[in-house]
Image (cartoon, rainbow, N blue to C red):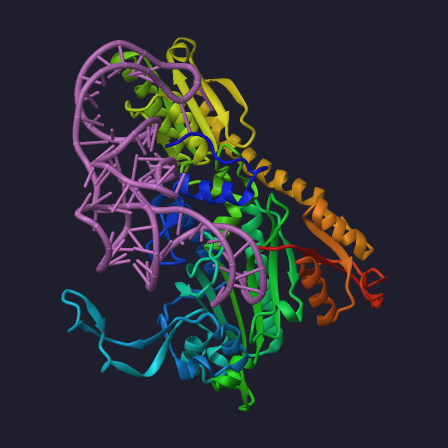
Length: 492
RNA sequence: CGGGGUGUAGCGUAGCCCGGUAUCGCGCCACAUUUGGGAUGUGGAGGUCGUAGGUUCGAAUCCUGCCACCCCGACCA
């Protein structure tokens, strides 16, 4: 492992790419735009999955699995959605290879094996799922239908970046059907708050809960809600979305139910998702020039213990104490790694575990053995202190909680320091260049103005915050009246 | 899809202009000494120079095609 990461301050995007690779989260693959998620990165994703999955179950959802492929005729049934994704769909046209008569040892697509109907590799699953729901829903008694699936999807992106934008990515997609519009809207909002709760309490990423403007809305939805986080370079990142689909998909796929009164009505739908993009958010929100900084609740290894020893006997003495401590901490649900490799020296291990973002490091050496102490180092602040060894079992859990809270507070303070209210377009442009972050400004509500600002400044309206206070003002560009400020930012 | 760039050992690279069988660092393997912040020494292994063709006595180097990846734009979770 070579020393030193690029500096965030010098080249943020190089820093990100290198960090993702060197920390062992992911790497590029032989397939253009597709990444390999490595064991350490996947372990973090698995922790995210576990937490989210529990939250989905707690809100009444069940998991199921639908096919990777969507017949073209189904895909195009909901026109707006189909059009929205058309440009980035991978399409299966053939089902067989054969040996190439012209090139020995090579294969070619069998020209006689063309599919009668092309299959779209799902960019999202509304089509196949709503087609299925038609068969599952007859009566109000079948509602609400609350399903989630964990899956991979493919969107043929021109430009990709590890985790942030890849041609194939992993996600969960919830798809629900309800008897009334009100229930569906409630579901949409409920899941948005689940995401926000997850982002803030597990990712330690403060997020703005809001609604997208019509321009930024999911194709086929009546309303798109989102959570938006701020990265350390001042760019916003959409970390999750929740859509109120109205009856669009129910109409396109003819999903009707009989009400209590025996009247046939179309059901109301929602869909919501978060993806492996959250991994990118995790990296970009908290990490530093030494490597990852993982919030304890998502760290695959929460505590690493490094022995510092001279000779076999001393190592044995240390190991005996450490293994007892490890057992005690594990009994409290803490994941502990005892790094007793004798092929690396302590300094190397310190640097390596810092790169990997392990929240707490305990080092114990000869002097500690004599004094009954250990050195405790926290990753978030880099503070080191000497502690009584026997206290560690009580101290460490509290320290992990403290780190979790501190990482969140730090990100929150950063967001607050980088959220600026502006009232003139000149100031808006100046702030975007001088102090990137969220910019709160008045907007007249028209797509034209939004589009113009986007073209001129590359900043988009990230969302209209759900809790934004009413405030009379005028659009900074057109001077038209506005009832509230919206969040602008340059975004990933 | 437009503009730019790069392909040489696991990784990062020199060599290319000016043709003569590949440089250095990290990593890897062995042994020894080491171990409180990325150890040191000695020895060693590892390369169809992206790929296909062409020019030449001879190609990493010159020419042509192709492929891949990266960066910058337009598009997007």
